[in-house]
Amino acid sequence: MPRSDLDSDILRYIVEHQLRPGERLPTINELSRQLGVSVSKIREKLEVVRTLGLVQVKPRTGTQVQDFSFESAATLSVLYALGLDRAYFSDFSTLRQHIELSFWHEAVRQLTPDDIAYLRQLVTRARTKLHHHPIEVPFEEHRSLHLAFFKHLQNPFVQGLLCAYWEAYQAFGLALYAELSYHREVWDYHERMVECVAQGDFEGGRQALAEHMNLLRHVPGQDKQNTAQSPEEQTLIFRVFE
Image 1 (spheres, rainbow, N blue to C red):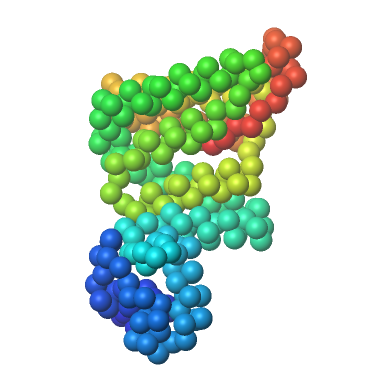
Image 2 (cartoon, rainbow, N blue to C red):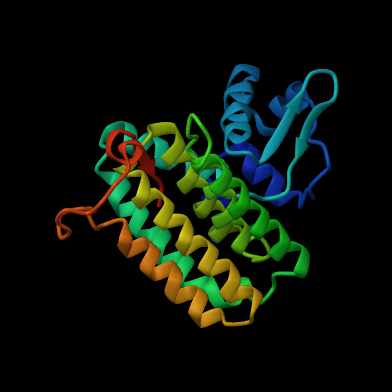
């Protein structure tokens, strides 16, 4: 793309001057002079670029270029879309599922023994929360577990979209509701994913991931009659996060 196509004076300036992460932009007054744009407009444009996570603006230290990240831009766009219509979440969820399944093998091959130990810790922490009184929903563990599988992927767009998914999920509280036993079953799949990867059975882990995602489309109890459940499972309803 020609640099002139960048519809941002600030971004075009960064690209044309090949500023690297950590380098500082000129002062607002100097940018105004060089670009022929008013100081107020420069401030507005800087705020947009800052919101996208591409620069960091600090009082008395100036404006510093940041490492490229797609997360802020993706999150902002998704949250805007969901604000217009929450039905967009289904489309975004489908995209996220295809991303995880498509990049699974590439991602998990890069996991280290320390990564596996961390994933096992997340499973343990989640199970502890689900057996705690009162029970706690292990959302942070769920988010951390899925992101940890893909942490070594050197693809900022994949990383940005996956992070944006969990930001959107948490911000809008979009979830399926299920009985406690169903929620625990989700973590059975998570544990299976972790142990398959630990044993080098990457395809087995991917299969568990796919089954886990399909599980969330199933409404528990509809095809089971007279299933014995504890009073706790009959009365407590929890969010099941994909």
